[in-house]
Length: 452
Ligand code: ARG
Image (cartoon, rainbow, N blue to C red; front, side, top):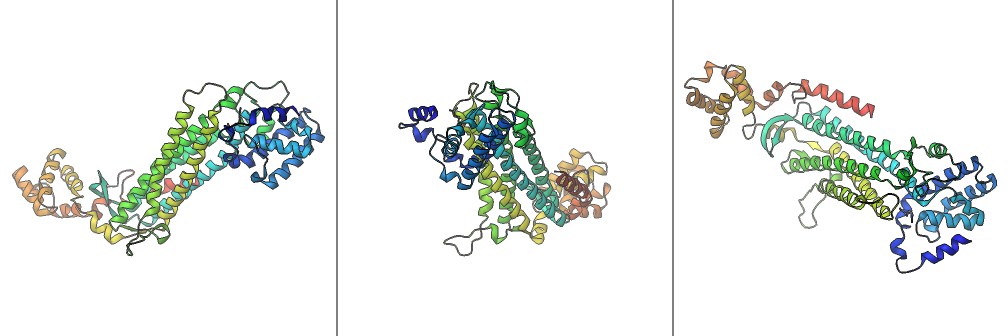
């Protein structure tokens, strides 16, 4: 067998294990079996190989599948090892399996086949997270909490409004992953080494057998492009970045006693008996670093690679697997941590007015009653230097306007504007935190989840 002779010539030497991807290829073992099956069926249907031989190869593949990846003979990669095992089972005719293809289109098909599954799983975790956030929002439309900019108390808002802010971001993460999925789901099989084949193959048929939506038409593009890996990893990295912000918020909220994480999502200290730490969310936060590293590794590997296939591509794939695993797990954990956390409404309400967070509402009230907004801003800023109450505002009015606040507004309206709950209720513009404004946002979020 010429193949064996050729392989012996090239398979020895000190670089053998450096060359081999066999161990890492365990991930695409099942995919490779499926791709072999589809290819063999197509070859037989096209009369490129006999039905008899095709049947024997398919039987051998069944046995190889049952034995599993660990039982494969040695090889440079899973494709070679499975082919060797087929030849061991069938005899030299087993070598007909590799008619009209190359490992280059084969590996591209394997990666796409497996990644499809992995990305669907990642997408599902984004849906679960959205569901958790929607549940929190539905339960807490009236739960007042402090809102921050620059991590300084800014304006009161509600837990629902906060949760739906993240839901909106995760919804876009889902959309980016779905879009990446569309482009993963195309068959490169039949591209061969890069230059097609003289055999009368049917690429649409193998695509159909493998459930791909269409084929990557150009054979050089099919066997050597990996931009689908890049955009998938980027979409995952974007999602990981969303998760890191969410995790950071909850870690801060836990620190302030606003939220109590479930024990399932907490850790303790080996020395400090009283400790309950938000370790899971710290790890979620860190996964954004892994994912950004994955994008970086992949980009740097692909940058400047000439067409067509180069072996560098073998190391590109790993970045995508590591990223999809880490981000999917982080997303799942974030969904669980959010779903099981308890919000402390009293602590949130007590803090909601801290740092004169209703100041903007008071300025808005004065502006609505005829004072130029800039003058109102100045007046409230002067009051804020003293205290967040009516007396301080009245003193500032004397200072800035030379007359009483009562010349502009009813003192009761000012007292109401100073109340965090009233302040939230008044901000009912589209997308705002007032419960009436959050209602439609919740509906949009539920409809979008249903549609995805
Ligand atoms: N194991 C390789 C990869 O993952 C596929 C084999 C293609 N090898 C080759 N020498 N053309 O990319």
